[in-house]
Amino acid sequence: MSSLIPGFISNLVGRSMTYDLLVFIGSFLILMWAAGMLVTNLKKIANYFRLSNYVIAFILMGFITSIPEFFIGISSALNKIPIYSFGNLIGANIANLGLVLGVAVLISRNLVVNKKMAKQDAMYMLIVAILPLILISDGLLSRADGIVLLGFFAFYITHLIYRGKRNGRERKETSYKELLGNLVSLLISIYFLFLSSQMLVSSGLSVSKEFGLPLILVGIFTAIGTTLPELAFTLKSAPLYKGQMTLGNIIGSVVVNSSLILGIVALIYPIAIANIFLVIISSIFLVLFLFLFLIMSKTGEQITIHEGFILLLLYIFFIIITYSMR
Image 1 (tube, rainbow, N blue to C red):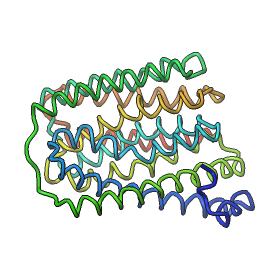
Image 2 (image 1 turned 135 degrees about the vertical axis):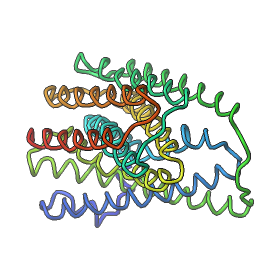
Image 3 (image 1 turned 90 degrees about the vertical axis):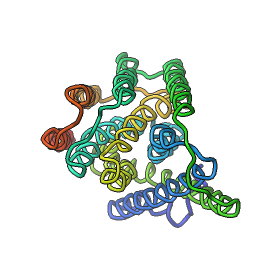
Image 4 (image 1 turned 30 degrees about the horizontal axis):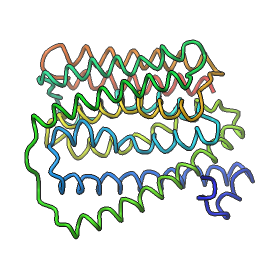
């Protein structure tokens, strides 16, 4: 995969801190642009096949907004540094539950969670997100652990597809010509996702060496950007749906990150933990966010604006704590 990176860019990595940062920032922006392009085209393809709103929110959007984490995970595993992806995925889950959910609540004022299915999915999300932390408690997320995570994802997706069929309805018509154009754009966006994720991993590794930062910490900070698709979706959907679409997207993203992506990464290259203290701190915050989300979704029929502020402040506190551990 390293051959995907143009020679003049790969030659910049490792030359100096300035070049490393420029490549890191540039690849980061390309990754976000490509992810946005992918989201747009997949939504149009979904219209052509008339997928229901439920499927799009809980399955399609939950998956495609995790595309940056997916490609970073693949690139990290193939480069034999899967701990970078592990940090990115933990950071992304915390960002989804703190930053993205907090913003969604502030935009929609009060995020309605009165649907029984949303509460059920919140509990399942809690279980799936904690499972990798249990499996890696021995210091290694093995290939066998990866198979377990993929098994949980298969169960979850089958469950949602069954529910999606029961709640399906027709969507906006999309022509065959438009579909072909969307497929071409889809392939282009996938190429740039591969390219930018490889650049991000390569330059991130170099930056971590320059600053003396653990790779897992670089991955955690990278997650602030890789959750931008979720944040962009939130900004568009929250005012219209009072956060309901956002809720499904966040649950789907956390489940995809914790089961599908981590499972694939572990299968390609098992994840060994070096900085166990940083993993413990990050895990504590993740579990805290998960339980707060579960409590907020079950007490009353909405997550209030005050609770949204709590989530955002806690996320800022998490960033400060992890940065102080560099």
